[in-house]
Image (cartoon, rainbow, N blue to C red; front, side):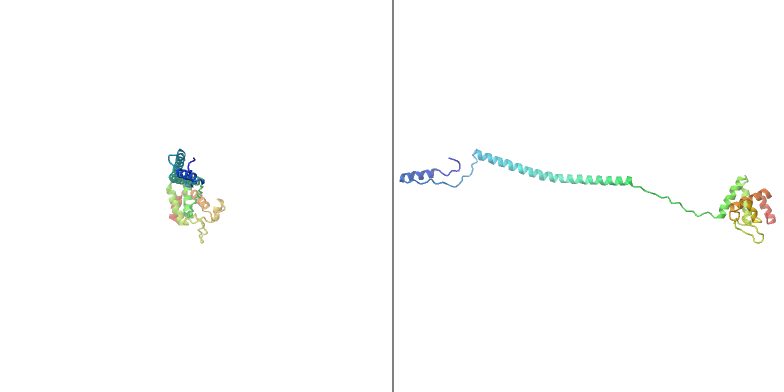
Length: 214
């Protein structure tokens, strides 16, 4: 009889009594199912397979949870490191590709006064003539008294003009035509005049001290 059938001893006894009474009764069928017995090999195999499947599923879920939790910080750290590397690379590239243009601004110095430049030019010409520095001192004293090194100085009484107070001023024109406004032209003429007339600036200065002119 198959497992789970309800035709047992009670049903047999009922059938015996029915035959004894001369009547035939259908066999009663029990609808209750007996619980599977652990001793049944087929049932135990099913239970073992279910347990193995359940344990495997639990292990997989636990591994996924634990693995995901442990991998999340690592992935975050790796992502942060990648972003930092990209940032450093971007800064590095930007640093090397940046072109800095520095414009040098020249310091605009005010030009030296004309008087200072005229003295410096006269000193160079005196040095070229192999005269000692005392000759320039005499020349400085002489032309300071005559015109104070003013290349536009004009004596309305005599008509003398320029730094050397040439009389008349047009004499300086044989050096250059710009004698009216170029102090260098006037200095060149004055040194030629002094050399030809007095031999040296100190000779001209001595004459000026004695006669108040040269």
